[in-house]
Image (cartoon, rainbow, N blue to C red; front, side, top):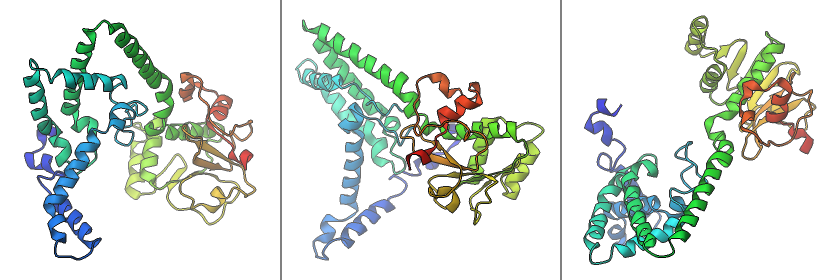
Length: 353
């Protein structure tokens, strides 16, 4: 995409192209202060620029993000339970800074210091998403060089075996985060519940090929697209039908209707699925209603993501009230039979009410 984008297009969303946010900050500060003659002296575009730049710069070097937790909101692929560096790198960073203060290496240390403002510029001028890992890449590379310098200084001592032991434990801890925790933590960000929803509908279709299904969602075209993707329903035979559903904005396929409005009352027959966050469908969200209601929960906390009313597939099994993943094979939904799928990925929260 970038080779086909002109310079002005790449500068959109930066302070070089749009300074209106500086006026907004200054005006907001003046509005929330006493109207004194000296107010404009400390609330203007220049002070707003200094505050905004310092905020972005300090956030990009936040010790919490660098050494404890990464950026879950910026990237679904980040192992956000782990920092960009190891905890032991804090000591190595301090050692590296000390080593670069020596006379032989002082010139290198000064060059690193002078290079930092240039490397941090993409973060300072950015007005869009705060994806520090991408925009501060060169700054973090500079930190890594200083950490390496500190590791080299430690390696020269007779206690190098301590460094080896600590780093070995650190690598093992990261491996545990990545291979043991991340499959569960990252699943929610990877639209896993939509896969579960699709697999549930496939079980319904196997038993009742023509049964109408209504899915209540805040964004019907998005959820329909997800269903088509995960179910592999797009083919030469169905592409015209799918295109027509999007053109007409009916969002109906295979007798499954995706809509963002609810019927007034539940008829007690039609299989209905709703996003739990909606709280618009009275009969679906009323826990006291005398209905068969089960849920597709989130992996992190087993809270409801989708609620299913008038179920005809999973309600016959002894469903649990929370999720517990013991094996990566459980994520292979197509490899589970109906009973295993229902017991593993569908819950009955009425048991806890």
